[in-house]
Image (cartoon, rainbow, N blue to C red; front, side):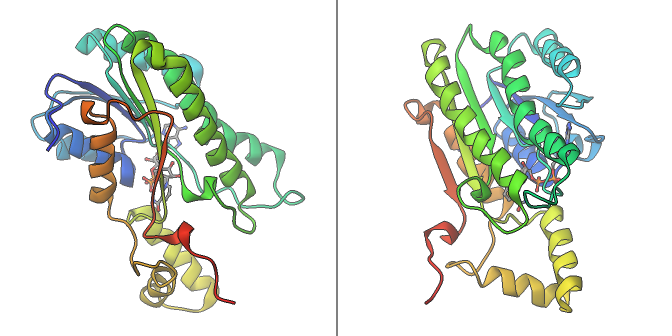
Length: 259
Ligand SMILES: NC(=O)c1ccc[n+]([C@@H]2O[C@H](COP(=O)([O-])OP(=O)(O)OC[C@H]3O[C@@H](n4cnc5c(N)ncnc54)[C@H](O)[C@@H]3O)[C@@H](O)[C@H]2O)c1
């Protein structure tokens, strides 16, 4: 297991399914944590046990709030070593005609601009001793689905942001990588399965199975599996890995449909 006992790790979206799992994993590995979310992250803090935690309610789309949060982490712990951006919204359906401009802008702000803002205000505190940025993207950044345009556009942008961060920050020994998950077994997925089941007249259990069977491995990813990859990528063992994207999707994006 990785040792993060001398590291300060910032996790955005820490009240969410993936953010809470990653926060807990970094805490178990000994990290001190800076956690933020639009929602209260008390349940995540609870899961972090005895780890030292600085937590704030922050809208990561608002520049002043991001700047204040990063400053707060720096003042509390004296550094930021790792930045993990998990914030994202999926509830932004629509095609080029139907999607409202307001929803387009909101999705780009939360899914893409927020990761830029977090890096903008965390990097000055990371430069002294180097570190790592990890952006949680999606397989939707690699291939698109019907009526899900802006989600894919935002995640593709996040992958591009990751590459630029890797190139521009290498001189400070700051690495940047992305993870692109397929569906992960989180409350968000359970909700999506329920809604799709209602739409297609299936029980949630049947809908879950229909979706899982689309994966070559016949199953979704567990948050703990994603956490294992995250802990490796942010560690010194991955010291020459930067600008890369790692899919964790049970082979979904390797698969062509049957003819
Ligand atoms: N769950 C999946 O199956 C899956 C698959 C692929 C990619 N992803 C990506 O992983 C990330 C996390 O997904 P999740 O399943 O944990 O979702 P989630 O909805 O459980 O967590 C997202 C968190 O972000 C927070 N948030 C939203 N807008 C915010 C804002 N403006 N400021 C601060 N916090 C804000 C929410 O309050 C929530 O706690 C997302 O970026 C998502 O696109 C998830």
